[in-house]
Amino acid sequence: MYPLIRNRRLRSSEAIRSLVRETIISPSDFLVPLFVVEGKAIKEEIPSMPNYYRLSLDHLTKEVKELWKMGLRSVLLFVKVPDNLKDNSGSEALNENGLMQLAIKTVKNACPEMLVMTDVALDPYSSYGHDGIVADGQILNDDSVEVLAEMSVSHAKAGADFVAPSDMMDGRILSIREALEDEGYLNTGIMAYSAKYASAFYGPFRDALDSAPVAIKNVPKDKKTYQMDFANRFEAIRETQMDIEEGADIVMVKPGLCYLDIVREIRNEVDVPVAVYQVSGEYAMVKAAAEKGWLDHDAVMIEQLTAIKRAGANIIASYFAKDAVKLLG
Ligand code: PBG
Image: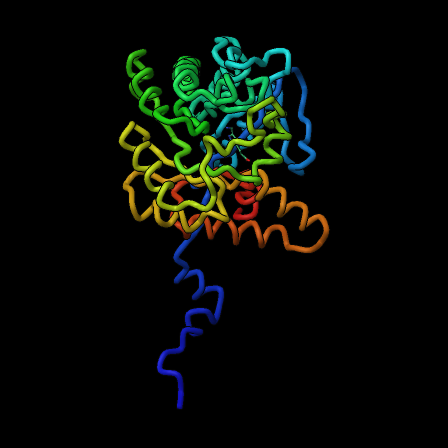
């Protein structure tokens, strides 16, 4: 008795494996998150994100030029806002000369063709670390959405190609789309964080931006009243379909690895590009295990990124983008 089919033939050498490989990651898959900080000549490593940095605008210029040379063509900007500029309604977010607005211009000056996406949410600007305005023990939905729409227009005005609302307020995509149209930014895209789960994997990111929710009386110190419950699946599809109906050009699932079932379902369900965010905690876990010598950093990184793409991601936002592209050669 011999096996009727020998699957191992297709695995017998690297040549045949590469010939039949179904999923190949390349520089054009990646969206590179960048953290921007006030000041000059600052490139400070984020303690819980080894080899990842907060950059002042001069270093941002250098960084995007380097990314461009490596074949990376899209960045996603985040800013770290000093405490004295934070308030409950995130008013600094609307400052035309604020750090985000300057960062957008800096990237476009350094590299005019680099695609610039911006994070739209109140948390880095909020004295409470929430993605919306806090009042009477609540995170207000509609008032927050108004600020998010104004913020999006401000980013578009500064030159952003896409705004990426990461707040999970209801109805924000429609309000942002209408505000952009009203102001004449017809070509500014929206990448909606559609299925964004309330996840413990965001910890290192909140260290990076000093944006963790603070303790306030009667307000939960987490984001579970707006970000999704990680136990839910149908809700992810509903959120995503609603964002598309409201005008999202790209939808996103976040975090990555633990949510690849959701990525696959959404990829099968919708016909717009699907992005996945491999978040800070996922990055930190690999770095920490590799530092201890417990995992092979590069092998695990490529395996994870390939799995994300295999699950259906068209775009991967990842702190590993540079490492991966270097490795791919
Ligand atoms: C802000 C925002 C967060 C992330 C992206 N945008 C944090 C949060 O929602 O608390 C997390 C990204 C990461 O962990 O890498 N709304």
